[in-house]
Picture 1 (cartoon, one colour):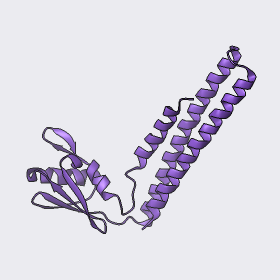
Picture 2 (cartoon, one colour):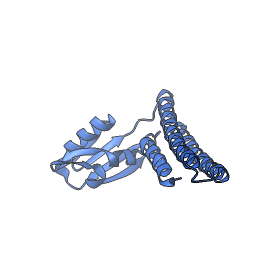
Picture 3 (tube, one colour):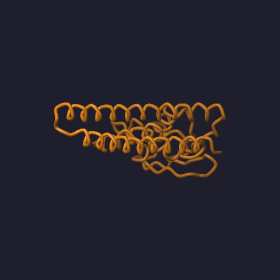
Length: 177
């Protein structure tokens, strides 16, 4: 079985949930915000630095102070946060999420995990179909077929466990104060 397809399913899942956070990780969120400057969409990490001030507060130090208002508007539009501008710096405060918001984020993470598991099941089904076709075409023996199916199932079990571990870790992170 092509393990790279399973790895891609995991990567896609991790990418889909990486911005879900509780009160931490604001710097990652800010760095990924895209502002329309210099005739293109650029990420804040390409326009300056993001530093934590503690307690959910961050400062964005832009290398070009003339784009501060544009970056402020991008943060407002993307994250629904209203930063304060001070020259070439922006101060952003991330409010602590309510329990309702944490529950909602946890449900979304669980849904994304289930989507990933469906992708993995589809890859398993495709691989089993290939093995069956090889067996029916008498390209492999019944023993080889059973061995290949067993290896596929073992690999799928490992990847299902990875998805569950990632999901559990992210939900724990979301629900941690």
